[in-house]
Image (tube, rainbow, N blue to C red; front, side):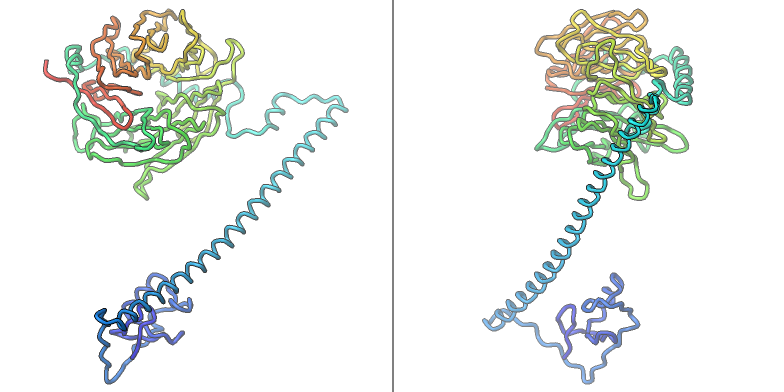
Length: 523
């Protein structure tokens, strides 16, 4: 009677290993060899050619399986189970001891590396001190450029105070192209009319997004590409959300499912954005910014079919409070509580510029960011209630916009109109100021109830409407007159809102764990 060394059962087709002499069931040992290429007991290299069929004559009939109808049979079964458990426990102990040894070795290596780095830093500092003493004794002064070169930097950034020439040229060309095209562009006749916007009512609610234990969606981005398979262009399919749970979610509205949950940030997500370019094929990049002082770039990996991290920006020393994709579609900008903004390339993943901390006006932490539709200006909000507008080509402060009550609150949101002439910004926690950039003064001010706290301002793509998301729902203002044409008071606390679709026939807003969509109802 033979027993298989793997299963412990009498084999139906017994074979014997010429290297170890053990007997196996052919179907089991061939599967094991195909997966591992070794003998399961000895670990030696084993091939199917090393197996010999056992020819038993006469063939012994396999014993009847034990039944549990008697105490001896039950004891026999329990004994077999106990033996198997002991063998598995022994194997786990071996693996545990091996893992402990590997971990101990890795810890020793890490400790040794830390000591080496500390020693090298001390030697570097000593060498710098010695060099400084020698230069002082010889009467040689160190130039600022040399000091800059000797200092430690996290990433390669431009230190001259302006953008690299090739990037400035790209921004100028983009500005000329977009500015001339925008003057000629008019909203389509089918674009949402005031009468239609007045009838907006709940259309769809996409719920159960992000974590139930840490609810709260802070940012929303809607894809501008047409839905797949000839879908309705007035009903965008893909959208991106960032939450308090430190996760970025990509959702397909058409399929009704989450396409990707992107993890990597260590604190809440403050901003998300799409960067989509159409060439021979669609290139879609996802951007996220967080309170952990970093921003991340994600893209689709064709090999795995998933979205994976491509780059992490670790340039800033404070929470990232603003994120904007530049109209060139090859750059993006960040604003931070460290009182600086920065510009980064999406083609090289390099930081091409970081602003210095100004002394005039006195520096304030940046709390929001918006890019001008032509691409030459960046607006940042501050904790002092002042909006600073920068010409990013020279890195210079082009304008400082301060209202009558520019203190006691932070500019937590900004939005340029599509025509590029107006900039919407809070003038208090519960009111909106519309700045005319041609005259550098406010052209309108819209107050709300004191209980309504503004979370987000967003112009639509036609500059016809301004959406105001707040603690008591969403309000839509008509551009020029700034009449309130829609008030969605039952929406609750909405952190972000935006018009969607080629004709602006949908209004989206985010709640604690849901995305709400409103559309035209009956007139």
